[in-house]
Image 1: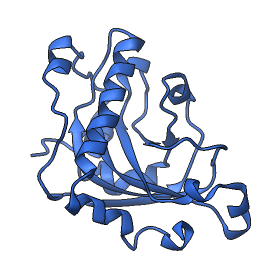
Image 2 (image 1 turned 45 degrees about the vertical axis):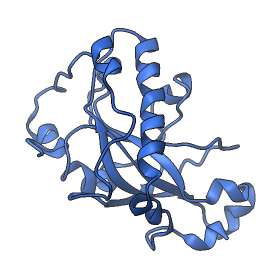
Image 3 (image 1 turned 90 degrees about the vertical axis):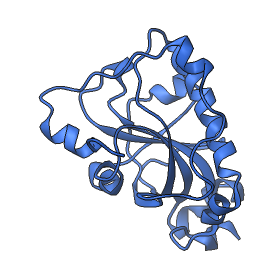
Length: 200
């Protein structure tokens, strides 16, 4: 049950909300797979938009992210609370720019997404940051990203150290892959929301 969506919090908060502090106890009991055997409301949530420049912190954390503009994240932020989510994403360059990418760069790929204020870095604005679990050879700022959000992993947290944040990100990635490795989730990699011509 969503008590207050991310968009509602952003609209009524005079300053970024506090987030619970991550603890070793929390990490010790984290499940390795989340969600039911098939996506449940409000999922799937379909989003798309041009990739924007962010703060560049993701690369420092070993988890480069793509930021989406406010209007692109509205279908997600108006439906769910802040936290970490999982699903699939795809980078879709214009036809004349496809030659700059390898075939595997244009496939529909697993992703994790953070929706929130990134309290460890004390952001002042709600952001949606997508990490596609793939090593791209080049940046794709300005290009279209399409994504389907399929489930919730955990709440937004604050951290006492960069190392603790990195540890949780690594777990997020594993949980996302485990959770997507179910038939009802895998089928969304072939959804018409994506440009499947790019994967052939």
